[in-house]
Length: 134
Image (tube, rainbow, N blue to C red; front, side):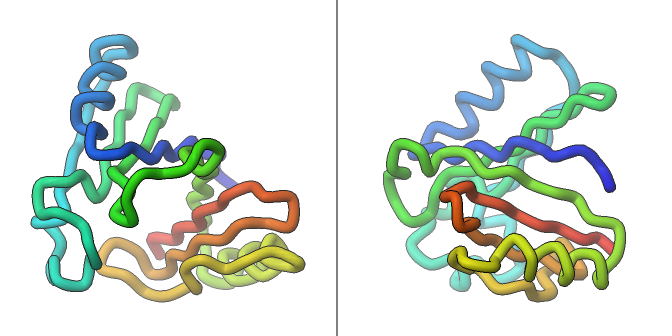
């Protein structure tokens, strides 16, 4: 399994923050807006210029982020733990275990960026994102 990646949620200032973190850490910054999605209308209330996904990488260091399309994130809900998983089978098994007693916020499904992606809050209140590219 690959390392857990912190995923930060912002209230409209994701681009500014990620550029700040790039200045701090260096590395390569990739930014995609909701307008970059294949079907921007499927993004709910998100504004086209809001950040759908940003990724800052430098060697093994990875920091991901986005603007919260649901509005102002609540304190404590501004970070998720993202797990890049190697296989669909492993993704499903881990997702189901983490979901036991918790709340699924986005069921596992194929997306335009992943073979499987899903989000949940475990029974302890921690937010998880599972992503499988294969």
